[in-house]
Each structure stands twice: as C-alpha cells, then as structure tokens.
Image (cartoon, rainbow, N blue to C red; front, side, top):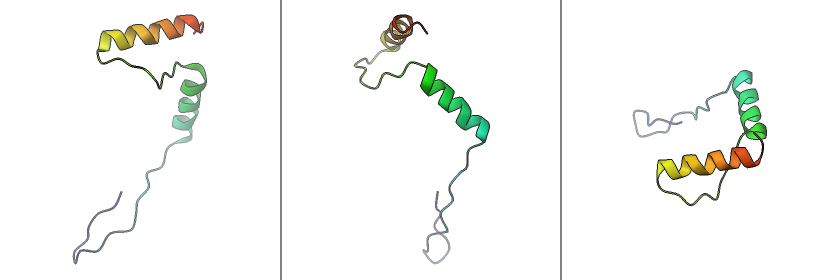
Length: 60
C-alpha cells in the first residue's frame, strides 16, 4: 500500500504481514477444504450446492 505525500511523491511501500497462526490456518483450509476455481454459477444457492456436492464427493 502506498500513499501520495505532499509534493506528489509516493510514500515508501508498506506490505502488511500475516501472523504464523493465519498462515497455518490458510494452509489447513487449502489442504483440507474444497476449492473450485472453474465454477460456473451466478446464484448463491447453486454455489452452495456445488460446494456441498464437492465436499460429499471428496469425503470431507
């Protein structure tokens, strides 16, 4: 994240950090969760059904 300082200069970039707990939780969700990147749905009930079907199919 950067801000424009007085004089039109850009500030020093600031990169947010994540806690170790957050990274471990993310790893757990990715390794054990349902990730569907090619889903073709535009309504929440359809999305929920597709995720539920995937979880059941993968025994999660």
